[in-house]
Image 1 (cartoon, rainbow, N blue to C red):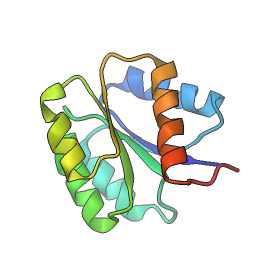
Image 2 (tube, rainbow, N blue to C red):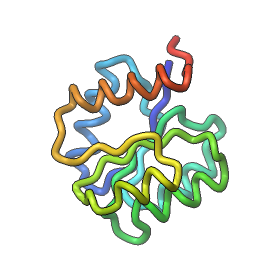
Image 3 (tube, rainbow, N blue to C red):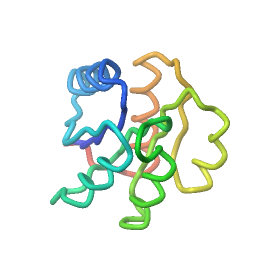
Image 4 (cartoon, rainbow, N blue to C red):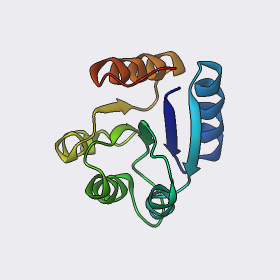
Length: 126
């Protein structure tokens, strides 16, 4: 089963993502509400997630700062940015994000994007 880590400061969106992901057969192994929390949780995870869904505009540390630190720990981490801030699209991709979704988007679009990342990277779906 593909594992996912949700990093989103909007609690409603975080819950919505989690429910949709679980209904579509994914395992949500962790969630964080800001970039600093995401980094700390990522460091503590015994088994790293296959994919991280990362917001950008968050308190304490933003998504780019969190992604940069997480990618220093593991350069193979697959990060999908999901943000209303389209000005950071190029920076996110150049940093190493595998995709950038502009909010708002449908949950169906998010699932299609996750499938694309899985297929492009030969992630194992059990």
